[in-house]
Length: 156
Length: 114
Image 1: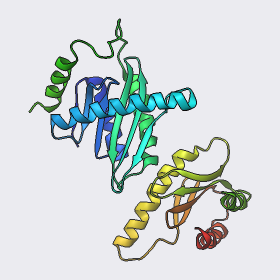
Image 2 (image 1 turned 135 degrees about the horizontal axis):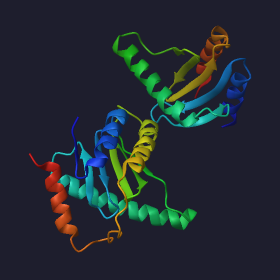
Image 3 (image 1 turned 180 degrees about the vertical axis):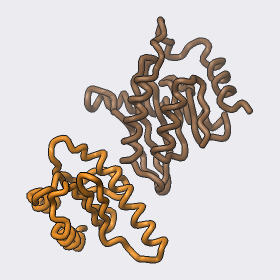
């Protein structure tokens, strides 16, 4: 099992999650779409696309949740014919992180939700201190950071 | 789901039964439940459905046909499970329960699960 991370503190929680929940793909990212860790992807391009889409889906569903219930939805689950996705936020001292995961019949949404709860707790416990200034939603260096993170994930 | 509530009510009145759940085997989520305080129904549902599914697949792989009944014996009690289609009935019992009676009742219930 290969887990690649940009920041070391997310490695153990993500590794435990992938191992316990038996998911085929997993991504940890910021709400702006910057990747922090991944499992199961072979190409940087796929990670970049998945992060962008996950960030957009989260932003849309959070707003929809606010409209309907006055608060963002806790998570999003989409069941396909053979594969399913689960996307949910995790609060840490470093701000909100998103976890996007793809799984098949080897596991279930109940198991994924169960171990996502553990991932969320581990991330919250292991996160380093908050930055002194919160990062901008879309920083000037966004593209530079994105390329750097992808290079870190897929270095050989 | 009044039909499930009635059925679960019947089980949870039995001695030593700490809770009963109807769970989706594919999703591992609770369809209906009656559990004592302190029992984490969603956690039990996810893990029990996973165990039941793997037992069913193992039985099929071994050429034994479908699973009739699955029981997990722990030091302080048991998980008893029967299923039909996508639904699994899970009972959480302590060591005071009469497993034989529960097993018979569960097998009867399995016949009526939709």
